[in-house]
Length: 357
Ligand SMILES: Nc1ncnc2c1ncn2[C@@H]1O[C@H](COP(=O)(O)OP(=O)(O)OP(=O)(O)O)[C@@H](O)[C@H]1O
Ligand SMILES: [Mg+2]
Image 1: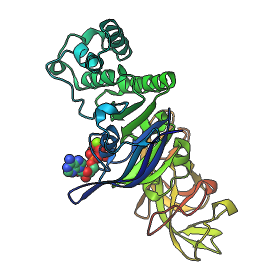
Image 2 (image 1 turned 120 degrees about the vertical axis):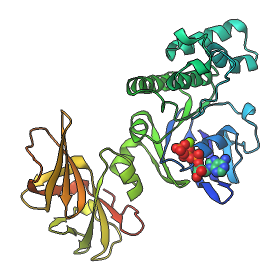
Image 3 (image 1 turned 90 degrees about the vertical axis):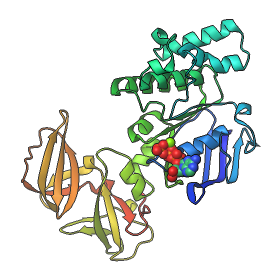
Image 4 (image 1 turned 180 degrees about the vertical axis):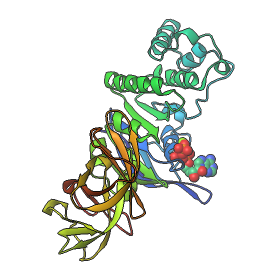
């Protein structure tokens, strides 16, 4: 059964549309990431799920019941805010314990649950401190601890790792994945970090300007982005785009001096001869070839296990990743050919995906 159903939910602040007719169903025990750039409506959506904001229109259902009017305290949900919102006068232990105290959990059990959360989040040495005596990353972990002890049906996590350093962040990422597997709770995880969303989630919901762009498993979002925005947002280095035209009943694709015939499965269903399209290909799907796009090497970045090469193709930047034994140097002139079976085609005007791929 779906734990949460979001039905045509919109939210305006004055004239600003923060969330625009959103439809999403979230399965029970699912780890769903909400991914998108700053200002796309992620926090607004979480606050509506938590009951801190009311939808302007549409309905939010939890366990089959409409909860639009239900106050936060009546929802079996814990939220970790982007801004932590710790109680400044309470110690770390007091902050973590607070939700249990409010629910009148017995003292012995409170102590035990606080100790467990502190151990998991490596906060044992800090339990007597006040929030102002903590770094941003430590405060963030306290906020996580406060949600954990409650053991709610649904966790709403708003960029909970954004203030951690790279090492702790990757450690906490792994801890959160394990925690999710262990407790089997529904987790809705907001991030603008596509790597985080890719590595942690069962599904990713990509948002832009308050609108849902695509919701699918990470592998699907990567292999078949629904539009040019998702294609460019997921993956580092980002997908390359060049303009091209379809020909011969959409069986052939041409961009400047490069042309390729499209396998049946890659042809757009409804396309016109000569139609202008945007061709997308990922840096790992680029090859140096005998013929193709004539490009000049601008920069070679050695990363160790691979090299990232930036090319200039008639004024357009193209990025490729190659094995370190490919010998390329700045100013080399080469021909580039993307893998024909991994091409992404987008409508030049709307950005909508044209081929199945
Ligand atoms: N209380 C508010 N009053 C007016 N406008 C708001 C309010 N809260 C959010 N907005 C606007 O709604 C839009 C969505 O904001 P929201 O905080 O949901 O974005 P976000 O995706 O969480 O961004 P970020 O990644 O920066 O946290 C933005 O344009 C923002 O300026
Ligand atoms: Mg936000």
